Image: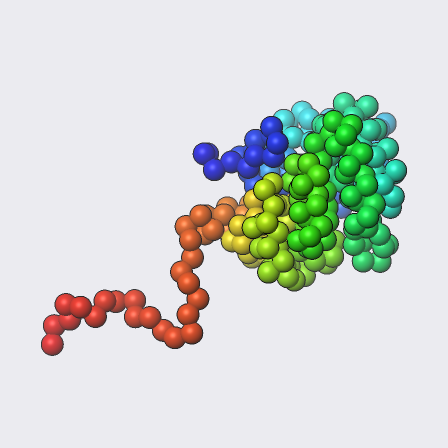
Length: 257
């Protein structure tokens, strides 16, 4: 319990953050969220059904269960749209902690770095706690951190691709060069991907499709929970160095001849 994820003034016991979209129904969503052990969930503000009953909506249920809400700007392609969406979330009484996602291309869903930087600057000045979805470019990540973002969220691979971490070296560089939490966002496909992200020293993992799109989403949610926990423990334990040749696991001293 002492090894908690701290983002600005927010403190979480789980280092897994999960999305609320793409499940077959609300009951499956609820079961997967519970199985994941997550304490923070993302909600796409532009896709909310504001007419749904409080307990049967993607915002009402997490509130009732005490999840920390992370409104996101999924579907935005300009800084202005992202800023407007975050302000709408605030008007709806959602969290001032926001995930900023400004897309640059509808096919790859890669972020538009220029518009992302612009949106983050405006939102920080407006008092928001900003967590930006960004590329795995260490220079961009450092600019966002230096600007005042509370965390940076580099992609592991394209959104929903399930390809896993394509460039672990960049992710590790980002983790070493920024002073805020690094949360891998997008591209995770299975529990081993989540474990690798945590073994690299990332502070958390955010995912949606990898769980919601699995054959058995609730079981995958459990696997992702365990993968994040195992990867974090492995990072803290400190892995052995990689070597070209073998090293005997039993000592040679004291051998009886």
